[in-house]
Length: 157
Image (cartoon, rainbow, N blue to C red; front, side, top):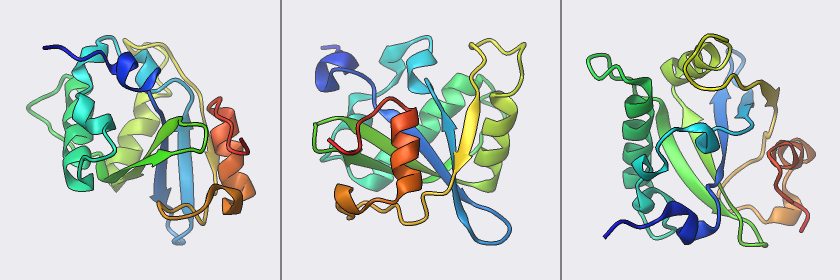
């Protein structure tokens, strides 16, 4: 049985990529329509978007998806160290993907090359310094709310 991803959550979750710079500051790399732009939506395993899926499994599935999109199986990258599924009060979801250094470099290169197979998407950097899975939405930082608003979500709902 093939499960439709859109039937699971109404729409694909947005992605907030986080990383640490050379000073140890936590930053976010934001790609507006990241998962929306992949050519085959069925390549996203439903388990990756299931709240009951263990974080380690979700991380493994995300790394597999990223390598399938790259289409360079002989040169596998570990894009993420952790992938956390966050649920907002309105029921919308977003993935917090904590990047490896390789993953950050790859995403920056991948999303600034205008001749790439996928549509060119711009990204912006923000500093969601206090983002974590257990935080209450009302206590999220203004920069994180700005990230989520940029992605079309409603963090104040």
